Image (cartoon, rainbow, N blue to C red; front, side, top):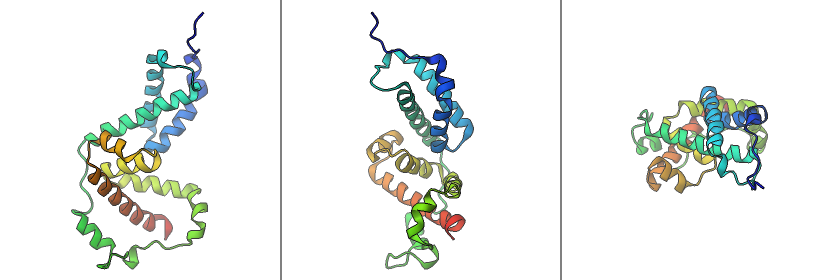
Length: 190
């Protein structure tokens, strides 16, 4: 008798392609890349069928494979030369956004009804603008932000994955947040 859990790869496209694509597109914001990642997930699943132990559903197992494919995508992407920051140094960013006393400059403060923020976060327009703002960030900033905030990876994992130091990680994340805040303020909140 065979104790190996039964996988049905012939049904994966029918049963899981849409779910996996939806998962991927939210994390990479590029339809072609998302489609490629889903295909790579199916191929990876076929190659590692013997590793499926049956402790999870096929769907959960395939999503886990997809997560690793997405992480690999960002790892490869981060190794390519990144575009330069809009600001040459951290000091330049700080002077642009902050007063000498450390408070936000009035023109860069978020304006709006923060009690309604939860409702606004659920609106499609927010995500559309967020995706646009993420797409104009320099590659490394966008990658670190997506891995931390959208994929909820731990900082240690991100540092190891992208071969950056802990302090560099925090600087990159800080700059990404500042630039996203500026972009979101200009394109959505105001």
